[in-house]
Image (cartoon, rainbow, N blue to C red; front, side, top):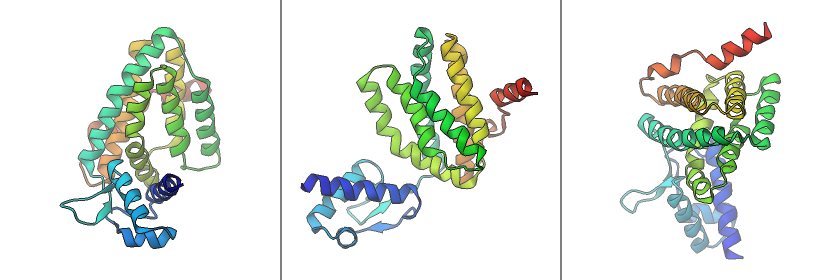
Length: 231
């Protein structure tokens, strides 16, 4: 019972961080968490420690835990780590031409949201990529990817708020990634993934006070091809 209470409190706090209801650097004390959820301080402490271990909160020199604040170099490290893992997975999926249905469904959801003018695509975007990772059938690879999941979602939620990365681009590049996997184009799919993630990485780094790299301004080759076909 105590574990479920800890999990529930921790998950709710994570969602508040992702929705930016809890801003970066917001302090979270045991007393505050205990009062918020009407739980014992020991339970609140366990929830906080879990979030520190998951990098949702940071604690320096035994001081009060605070909501993590990601800077430009944090984002670059997260996205480069993500790219190393995902590019190899997509290359291997292309070698066996395995396209998960869950990725197609998630991309269709993003397209539907875009048609309504919504930029709220973090959840289906993560499901698109996670389904690709899981399609490899390696529990350890999936576990490694999920260890990055919160930080990736936090990066994406921060970029989403700026409305600089169009879901139209996301949909076009996702669709081409799946087409390349299905066609067995292992080199091209890895190259497109790098373009896809590098643009988001540098746009976000710029939004967080860094100087965006040239990748932020590279036109989407997938979107250009899609518009040419439509025209």
